[in-house]
Image (cartoon, rainbow, N blue to C red; front, side, top):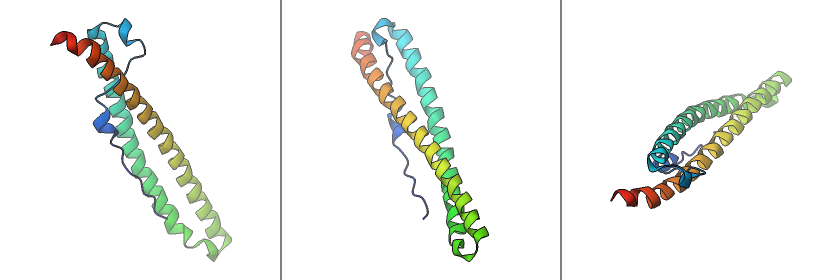
Length: 123
């Protein structure tokens, strides 16, 4: 029952971001916004990695008590509590994962737009 948590390649993709009104911003403003969003994505990615460790530890804790479930009602209650903690942390991880993926996808679009409009101007 040990949880398998795969890491995203989101950190590799963080270099690409998008701004809703990129065309309305100057190239310098777009570049600054992209940098700020990259920092935000990096922080979310770091928090996600920390949460992965917590989820894995909670999964291990649940696994450790689950094997004693049939021993008594007290053991069953302990296993239920451990499972609830694990499930809650998994849900938090999923939310953070979706948030990070959405941010990175948006950034990728914005960087492409920046490269199309601003990077060509500089070459």
